[in-house]
Image 1: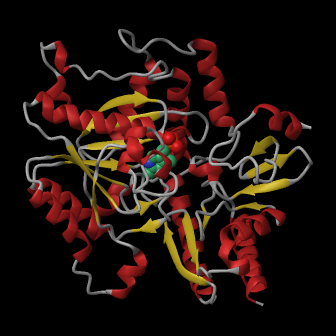
Image 2: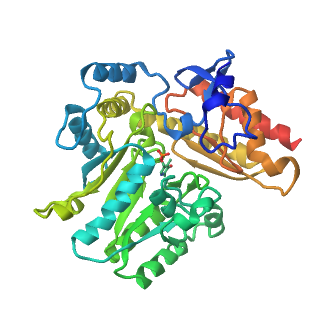
Length: 433
Ligand SMILES: *Cc1c(COP(=O)(O)O)cnc(C)c1O
């Protein structure tokens, strides 16, 4: 029923509508569970595209949202302000890595990146310096708008638009499989290409943008903290701004509130979205240092940061983001994530023992396993095959190519984790037999 109506007018993201199976109609969700129109129950193993934190339809957040809607749903944010915007900024500055004290609101992860790039670019211009080039990394994903796509590494996603993108220099990034090969004698040689670029382009680079500790859409690639530390050092040595795109990693996903904490570093600009609103509403934050803010603070109106969105600082989104942060405190969510991480680590050996598994990558509440790729037959499409197999067992595990990902909402219970891990084991045993 819903599907027929959907077919008539809708156009889904990242979906080849001609060949994709019909979308699954969801009528209700609660905790880690999604309920379909056909009365099935599915475990949301991808936190609804990596956004959900405290479970679906959480009563505490529902309450905060309803309360805010009854009071003030929205108001223009140029020339006006409101309590939820101010309170959220105060709370964020409290938890963010040190030095990030200026909060700029937008709508989603891609816009939070666009804002960061424009901010870094105009920062140098306002200071009278010509620094017009950015450096980003291999495997990077920063979003789907044109600036964010430019910063992202080339892929099938960006290929149709490549003539449209501005040029971004690309440095080597650590790749865990490669790291394993240099095992235990990590000399950070993977950071040399960044160093070379910074030297060669001395004075031209506005900023380096990275996804700290975990490169998400590029394949769930986990870093060592040493690499991130080295990136910060290199940016300091060459007086270049560091932008941390924590759209995915922010709010606990990697086991710390923010991934930068793993390396004890602070970026000059941080981008937040996804889990910012607990998986409820589209929202983005770009937070910067006072030094950056001051380059725009001037009698000269041309030094204004000319950027804004109709829904900047939407009070509903702010109220939900506040409730999200309050629940991190109330529920000791970071401890909960470390429990989930423990379960994943226990499972690591079982998973690695499978011949079909190339590598297992674990950080915080993220379990990723890369499947070996065969050129033909069943295994060529292994990601999609596994996706369907898990769906038939009641688990949503959306893959990235041949990388399977289990990234549940943090409220998942031990029983549910054990069940999913057992199912993973059974499915792998089945495909290997
Ligand atoms: C998802 C993601 C984005 C883009 O966010 P959207 O809200 O989907 O536009 C940007 N950067 C990273 C690291 C992401 O994972």
